[in-house]
View (cartoon, rainbow, N blue to C red):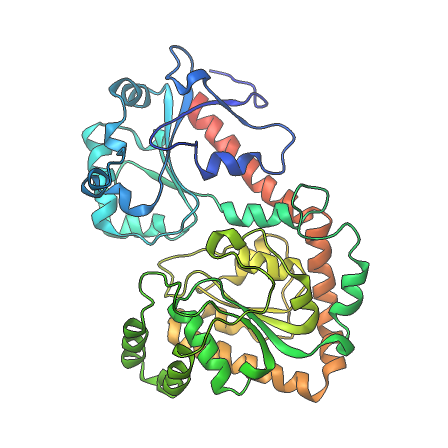
Amino acid sequence: MSHSTDAALPVIFRGHTHPGFWGHGLGVGRSAFPLTLVPGNSRPLAGRYLCLIPLRDFPRLDPGFARQHDDWHFSDLEADIVADVREGRALLIFDLSNEGPAFYPPLFEHVFRWLQAEQLPSRRCLWLAQNRAISAAFAQYFGAAQPAMECWYSDFFVKIAAYALTPGHADSLLPEDIGDYLSVLFSGWHKDRLLLCLNATPRIHRLLALAGLRDAGLLDRSLVSFPGLQYCKPGTSTDEVDGYLRDHPSLHSLRPHLDWLYAQPPMRADVFSEEGNALVTKLDLDVYRRTSMSLVTESDFGAGAVDRITEKSVKAFGVGHPSFILGSPYSLKYLSNLGFQRWTMFDESYDLIEDPTERFLALMSEIRRQCALLDHAPFEWLAAASDVGRFNLQHAHSGALLRTVLKQEDAQLTAVRRRLYGD
């Protein structure tokens, strides 16, 4: 069956009050929205369509959890829609593109058992999330009995950052004229701190980062945002951080610095009172003007079970700031794939180390080395960093970053159309 590649894809959604992050993200930065909601959000009586299941969050894959919270569960999907998926008239998309969870078998098994019980073919069922390590985890866990679902990736927050860094759009973060900003970004006369470290929520690796900076004598010479331990994510209590330290003897020197950090009030470098995801489209250029480099503490810090970057790295690179990434291994490759250049003056071998503790120690060693070089010859250091910084800033400001993201999205949309229409 042929179908126009320009026509908007008909969509219905179930289980949420809106169609989800993937559908919303597709409309950002585009002149024509590639999806169209079927009137009344009702199953169409003829023709092919997408059925989106936006997942509010990962635990709701568990039917017991969903019932406990009086939530709709994907197994409540109407039988006629399930039949349409089975017969090839519909494509089923589980949308978790706002999160990047690791593969957790007990939750995923609820999905797989349902898909297999309903005899839904793998080409008609897609899982959308930010974590690129899910496919390999599926294969390793299920082996030859790999379940009937494919994993695709959708970096919603990366797209939002690319959009926000492109002048001319609503809520753009960069001004139309970046001349004044660029004139001071690599000027040693305007720097009053060595390093910038913005932390929206407490996580173990963010506490380690601040303790590591203090251990190196760099915390007082840095601009830092950190909300304190009053706004904690699960897994970031002081007991859990202390347990991590006990399990990693190479980090024991950080113990007194963590004790000091626990007692500190919130630290603020930028001007925003927002927390969490509300900071995605916030940017204070002054903190980049005042500092020479960034330590970006990403959302994830592990051995690669979660493989993604977020808007945090994209914003730092997009404003031209020389940046280190404390996140998952191989994080820097995604920034290269988005068209950014990397600072060859940095030893980036830390990014290739899969063990998170070893990666952290290697990164902190390189930060100390770069800060020593910066202290010794600040104007020369900034001059050496300026070519890459200017390129990256222009890459975002010119719209090239957003075009790169849209090109990647176009390829995914083409693949979705082929799955749906068989072109």
